[in-house]
Length: 126
Image 1 (cartoon, one colour):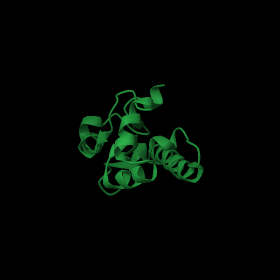
Image 2 (cartoon, rainbow, N blue to C red; image 1 turned 120 degrees about the vertical axis):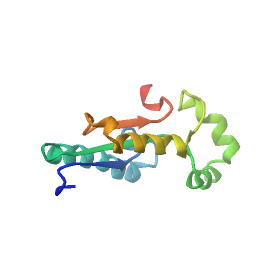
Image 3 (cartoon, rainbow, N blue to C red; image 1 turned 90 degrees about the vertical axis):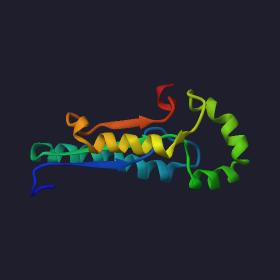
């Protein structure tokens, strides 16, 4: 990237990098560190043509979240309560997050650097 004076870094954080939940302090701290790393890299490398942004997904329908849901009372229970913390009322999909990554990596987002994009079904809008 430095050699070509252009590039785009897309970091993956979490909605828990922006807001915490009970018993997730260490996880939230690690995801918050990614947010600040993203902003620091954006400032350090913007003039060199390198952009850096991060995505903070909310609950996304993935195998790891299926395993997590089992510990929380089962997938049906978790999905029935999603609307209480994600106003859109459903989990996100891996495909939706992938399209956001593609956008941030592309020249279509060439004016974005240091941006922290919440893809959380409205969770952080509350």
